[in-house]
Length: 343
Ligand SMILES: [Zn+2]
Image 1 (cartoon, rainbow, N blue to C red):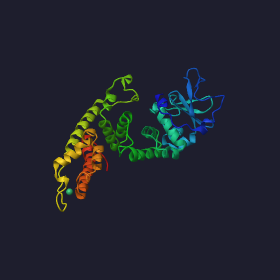
Image 2: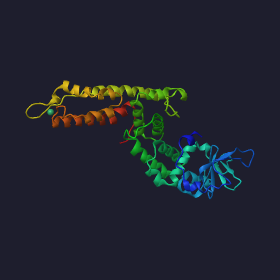
Image 3: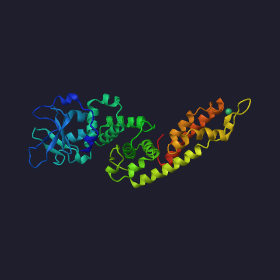
Image 4: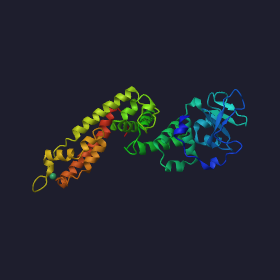
């Protein structure tokens, strides 16, 4: 039940207005059969004209069978009795007193919060995707739409994962999101996401404390409790990655000299001591020891011309830095993490 506390999906006001006063939502209901456990009516996903009951843990939802069937291959087969252990298995289906069939999804290993995200997306897919869902929402949608076979939602969520979360270092990931991203990226074959998530964990050294702190109450004030942490193998990968990033940054900031071809005398690029002074005098060196991707961008933004470089040498410096950045992200990172990344 932790999912509902931490991440409540958008509430559908239209659905809420359909609730009846005599049978208020979110109230623990006594099951008519004493042998069966109580349940809670979902505060949002309870349509009075719904034709099927779906329950996860002790939360029951009243939904439209036709909408589930249209969108999900799994529900279509379940309703058609094609899933073994479906209709005749009392563990997954009971007959409610209202005459509506009740399906319990616990055995499908579907989290309540993930299913709520899916139902929110189904209610108004356009708004859901236009409002730029968070990484956790997209992760939830991928998990649930894969398990319960909602193909359109699965492929749309995957495309957002690739376009918004796998390629850039923005928006930033929290530790919890990065750990979730590593698991999701491996499970659904998104190596770019795994790469980004490891980099996010590696570039902020203080995050190690969050990963190794054994008890939630020992976490620094203001940090969110982590649902999952890295296992020992991934932790070793993370330590190796930090070492490689640091070593690469040291090598990279020792910028090679440029053969200046400016007529009338060479510019400042020909002086290694001047270049050293520019790089080290800015503080960029120290600041980006574990984050060379951002560090290279900062180096490219230096006012090289203001520091005595000619146009040609400035352009060559930026070309070299851009090339190194691509090499680091595409070649080195994938080698260090042993990833097979599709082009
Ligand atoms: Zn020059």
